[in-house]
Image (cartoon, rainbow, N blue to C red):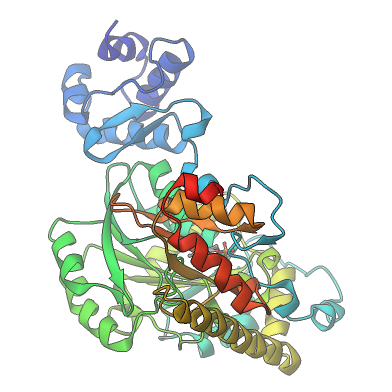
Amino acid sequence: MTTMSAIEERLEAPTARGLAQAVSRGVREGALSPGAKLPPIRTLATQLGLSPTTVSAGWALLARSGTIHTDGRRGTRVTGPPESGPGRYRRALERQLDFALDLSTGTPDPALLPNLATALGQLTTAGILGSYLDDPVLPELLEVLKDQWPYPPEKLMVVDGAMDGLDLVSRSLLRFGDRVVVEHPGFPPLLDLLESIGVVVVGVPLDRAGLRPEPLAAALRIPSAALFLQPRAQNPTGASMTKERASALAPILARAAGTIVVEDDSAGAVAASAPISLGQWIPDQVIHIRSFSKSHGPDLRLAAMSGPSQLLGEIAHRRQLGQGWSSRLLQRVLLSLLTDPVAVAAVDHARDEYTRRRAALVSALTSLEVEVTDGDGLNLWVPVHDESAAIVRLATRGVGVTPGAPFDILAGGVDHIRVTVGLVADGHEALALVLAAAANTTSWASGAR
Ligand SMILES: Cc1ncc(COP(=O)(O)O)c(C=O)c1O
């Protein structure tokens, strides 16, 4: 039976939901097997007497449920068994061994997070809500955030971490088949998220100053729904966008007025470079997200997100149907941490300490002729001759790092490993020796020795 007839036979209603149900049933009943290629939207629309918009909306429902996925020009297929799920994220963080020194996590050093005792001591009740429709952001927190924001935001909301912000933006504003530009190399969970929605991802390379203007201009010649970038301490490279670069990118983006720019400032207050946002130039196109995970603790699960009222309004409205708001109890903890001089000093110290740790490892690696560039944030992007060999070699020395491949967008092979140097308080020279040996390992055979 052809894919087309398997769907046609099961189509009970000529709607997006009806189509999604028909395909789901086909998969459940074995008529559509994992990996089966689905017909192009127009072909299916003509054959089934549906509009292309209806088919596209049906595809979006199926992509969200993980039933189908789209793979650029190779088309849309029925999703295979679970290993094709959020693959990059899993590959990036998979731990095969209990490492003596695990530098694969990308997480902050718990010893450098501010102490919560004062903030928690100030909580007296678990928040008093007038109604579930109360202002979702504590007004006092809003004022503090506005003061620290890199541009005057039209609207600001609080979300449950940067990933929640990225998820809300993507699911509210992107549609199946949209074209979306991302940085190369880029953040694996974002790529998994975009893949789950079924957008077509296009990579644009970075250099030390941020996204490169010419390739970005070339990518945006085709209308694109969104550009995702990390303005500071880019994960994995550590690059931070300079003011000059931002002012070169802004007119390119202004010409692509239909493209929403989503900025993920995940290092937040532990980034050594000053806050920066394209919102200073093109506020009507920018959604800027700042996470507090690295600076104040990943388990606070909080980030702030700014953007034009209309876009954030849509997102907040959609969120009202689910979670509604981010815990005001946690917002009060964050407010206290952002205003208590002792907590502020702790975050300042953490930022300086991360800079010291990075610089110490960069200097030790440079003296061993590993060409590594100092960046910003918790990670170092270390070039290696052979990624797999380097990882195996490091594992035999008890050191865990993240392979570069899951960050690779342009599929040219990145030959790097990501090292969370932020976790390394001392012993940088000894670590550099181990990393340099791994970087120079050229084959599995020599790696195993
Ligand atoms: C680039 C990037 N975005 C988002 C996140 C997740 O941030 P959050 O903990 O605020 O969800 C991380 C965490 O490492 C990150 O590196």
